[in-house]
Image (cartoon, rainbow, N blue to C red; front, side, top):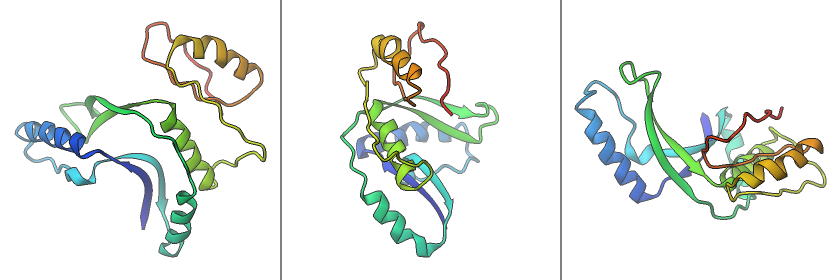
Length: 162
């Protein structure tokens, strides 16, 4: 059984995506489109899993508590290209809460161990000060960080954390 952890999409967003895809169908009549009710935001692909493990996975994921977050669906596109599309994608823009939730999923699944005295600090205003003031301090202290900023021309290349 193939498992993944995902967020459901609001019904109003589903309707808009369905309308958009309906307009695309005439340009690609042979494409097999996913059912609108199957659309979701994937947080973690778990992969092949023994069905006997599903209850334990559900229980561990049920222990996660997360604050509400704002998620926006913006750009759309095709991969690898519009002429030879295999995947239609919709870009997700979210505040730091989405990254924190995905990190929590990684931790409860055991993919990433949580330190005994772990804390989480978020700088989720999306403004430059989080990047130019907070990030360098965290980098000097060798503290892994996810910094969420708005798309801007001043955004430098960040050093990826291993």
